Image 1 (tube, rainbow, N blue to C red):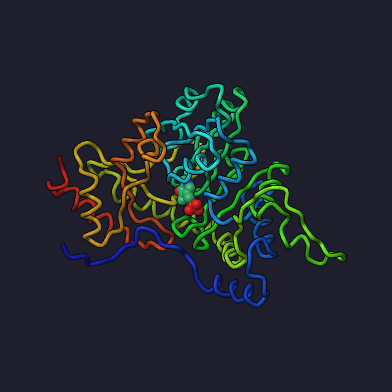
Image 2: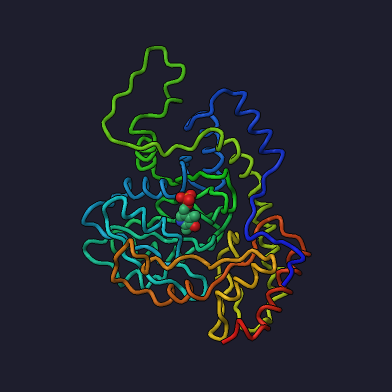
Length: 381
Ligand SMILES: *Cc1c(COP(=O)(O)O)cnc(C)c1O
């Protein structure tokens, strides 16, 4: 099969404005992390996410690690984690010495099943990490009620959800703390990068200190009249975002509404072209929320060989991959937890090209190729 077009699975949207911002930060002379450009980005990110405080970090994993430490998770504790996710979520719990307990997910949107989470709560449980599934927010009101009644904290893995809303509230403001990713495959990006956001000043101050080796950031000592010599009272990390990345992120943040709108339009375009295709279910958006479509995940039914579909699409120039991971089956966790819905999504979902640069001809091509592939008895069983 000859590919007459190539359509990338994902693609960042970056251009002249980012290059201009890089020129400016180069000229400023401050390239390292936690500097003036990071401070400016943090103010803008807090405003965009409806939170009181934002901390620019090296990635989402480090943000989750900081969050878990300031919320309180350590050896002997259990943290309930949404099972269907990139395993950074479970890994971050492992880094603290606590044990991740994996909760199954909703079959329609892949976010944590609140009843499954409730069933895992015991005297060792300290909190819950919900994941905004490829951007779509989880059931935060129900999760908050559960956490309140059992004395738990709630952490939002917002790696993919910049620009999403739940009941009109922006992703990032939906739990006690939230962690974003700005990896190249996410909705806004500096290549790598992340952020922690939240309203609680005490927790955010502690996270800030931990993210720069356990002292106040150097920018806070700029211009002091006496020589400021910090002393170290905790073994923090270098989880800083560089000011070079922050310069890019400030531009990306201004692009966010347009990028979400473009991906939403692409999703509507797929729905128009593929809504009646047999053997697959297109993604749905649950009530009271908006989906920023970091990825576009299609679910195959029992008559379709998912792996064969992905390989056939690739052969035709259409970027495709499996959806995301069931965590409980990953050997690293050695868990007894069972999550049949997540396991099924892991086995049956696949991703179609989704980014803000798709044009109608791309959507036509992808949809025609997928219909053609699904009509091939070789991918049917
Ligand atoms: C991408 C992703 C992460 C990891 O983000 P990094 O910035 O690479 O650390 C964590 N959680 C989810 C749900 C993700 O999709």
